[in-house]
Length: 93
Image: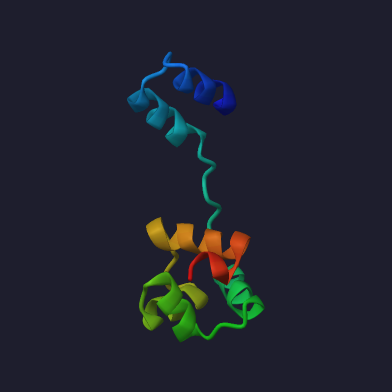
């Protein structure tokens, strides 16, 4: 469906504003990351908590709180975790 809308946009049948709205509707929601999943990701990539914090542009205490389930990542941090999980460290550096 998205490919069809992109073709219609390319041909001038859908304006840019409507195409942006359509793009946003087609984004898949990012699954939540619990403490176990964050710790497993960090260990799989062989990163310390402080390095993970630097990569995600957050504080060390935030990463620690995620790993003991005092807090949960959201917004940009959640998106970056998902990208890191799917594409690896090279995608963020």
